[in-house]
Image (cartoon, rainbow, N blue to C red; front, side, top):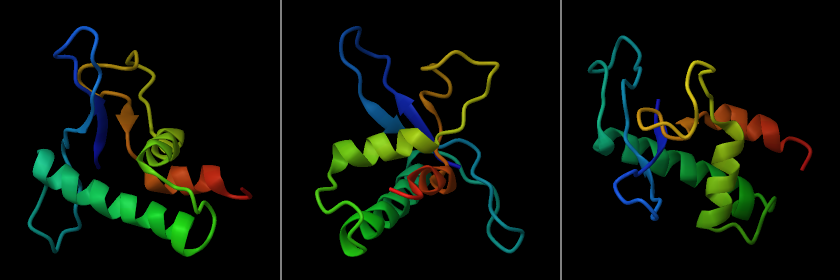
Amino acid sequence: MAISGICFKYQHWISYLASGKGFITDETAFGPFSGTSAAAALLTGVTAMLFEWGIVKGNDRSLDSYQILKYLLRGVERNPAYTYPSQEWGLGTVNIYNTFVSLEGE
């Protein structure tokens, strides 16, 4: 599962990123994945799903990258043991299903 994160490198500059940690795959696949390459591929697909929902299906024709981030943040999973944003988990674990559940009826 992809991680939505924050770059803590600079004191006054925040950058959102996808670090990718411990992706789960089915048993027929290659096994667990991690890293930014896997996270980028997953988040590209997630973003395409949101663009389809918004622009192609007409739910949000003015959809842009800022709005995508806002929608993704609506669905993140957060472990109550951490304070967010955290250096390990950023803003939480991306969950596109939760995002679409939060958009029902809009």
